[in-house]
Length: 393
Image (cartoon, rainbow, N blue to C red; front, side):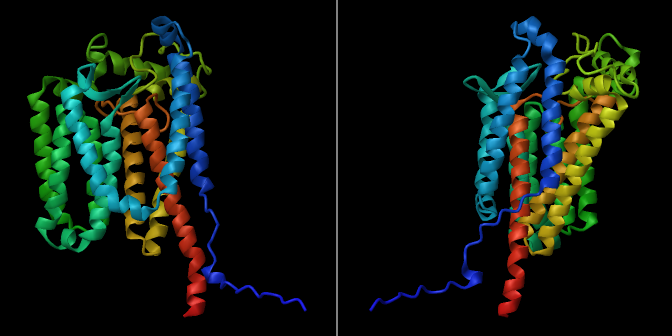
């Protein structure tokens, strides 16, 4: 007589879940901006790459490589649990501070700024990583010490002291733009955590005073601040870059002069494939193309804040702060870069997220997207498990 061995039934709630929740409404605009950026980098750099490197598609190939590395980095970031990101955030911040110190000692200087570490054929810009590490650290700190930060001035000033140290190291490079973005993002997270406005008033006053002192201490900062108000006063010297960008916007009109037909990229507009990529895009694709890019960024920022709100509703406080911080970072950097290109903000050395040429910026932004996707996935898993928990209760 044969005997059948009965297999134990595993309760449905105990079975491992293999569901993967992907926010395609976030992923689609990210991929659209990255691919459009790749096309525009090719268009904006083809002439200068041919003249200086005898390889018209040099920057295209490298940007494509950076995007590929970024995709791998995003997948890797999404595979790491948020608990690990929270646990190791102080260590990551320490690594970032050490890199900022290292770049001041052995960093590579370009255009008067010492911002890059040479790692073989690759130039690493530590400030890009530090902005991400600061968001991770502040998000974790607000979870661990949120009550202290909200209730006492001492608790509020402790993370501000860390930010002041990082800001000082960034200003020594100098990197005024990264300092402004990092500080504004951290203050936004503090506000969202419930810190009273009266504490911000005193801090913002001190920050503004420090910025005024820094600008007066370096004549080039004052010149940058005043030139954007009237670049046509000195169009062939201090106002040259901005006037060329404004000419690009004017030539673009409604529908642009056509992809690849920009005149300003032909050695007129400096940094056409990096900081001023948006001006070339506006010239070639017109107002319609520029508005499309702005709308794509707006959608990404909205999705980041939506993911943060969903995480907050599920009690995932670290994930919520992280999503809000990443959304704020992307919003500020895109706003500043576009504002600089349009002449409504002083010139800053900030790239257009996901689009401008640059390995550090592309890869770090890809990691930020990977973290947002991870948060969305965890919210989906939490949402899927809740009905079963309620049934057992």
